[in-house]
Image 1 (cartoon, rainbow, N blue to C red):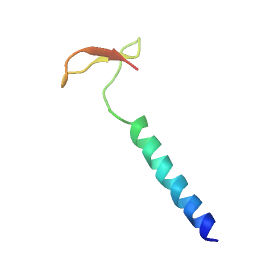
Image 2: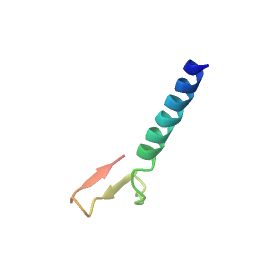
Image 3: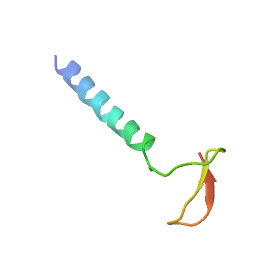
Image 4: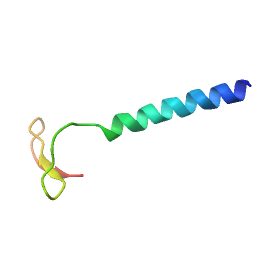
Length: 46
């Protein structure tokens, strides 16, 4: 029972971390999947 709870909590934590990186920024991208980074300067693609 304890292993199941730990595994469930670990899976929930891992899914939250993955979700966080998946929505790292809300900025739009152009047709090439790139955008300008106005905070740090530069242009990069995902």
